[in-house]
Length: 187
Image (tube, rainbow, N blue to C red; front, side, top):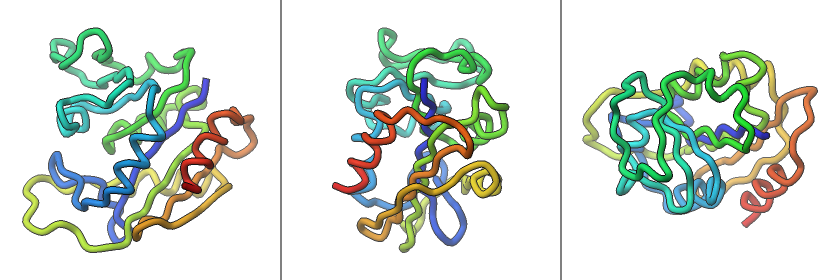
């Protein structure tokens, strides 16, 4: 089983959201994300889940990490509520970690069995959308962990977004998962 964290952050401030909104609109970035997670198991927090169009990603099982066990998902057959990140320590399938900031931090600081094998670090270096309301959410606390525990194996740039694929130092990484992501980065 491979764990993959994927995010896009703003270059100047590591911002990933303002409230429930991504503070930029880059079609190629959204399409890249959807292609990477297509057909996969995806875990995200409640706010990220609520920000999805129609609260879904086509052809994916979605695990909503929330402390509210009564939370209602939009698709009971394919979406599930999980209260504790530690439930993913023994998860037997590939898992894609899609935010928000608290979810990323929980996996990156949760010990060896939760630490993602691969991180897809997309960095947007452009203007933010004006007039967005809500809390500014950033992942600055996650970045020192990348420097310490990961090594960059690929990088490219598309539409003002630099995409880097990092793998965990000293561990085996599933070649099929890595090749899939590399192939999508090159398209």
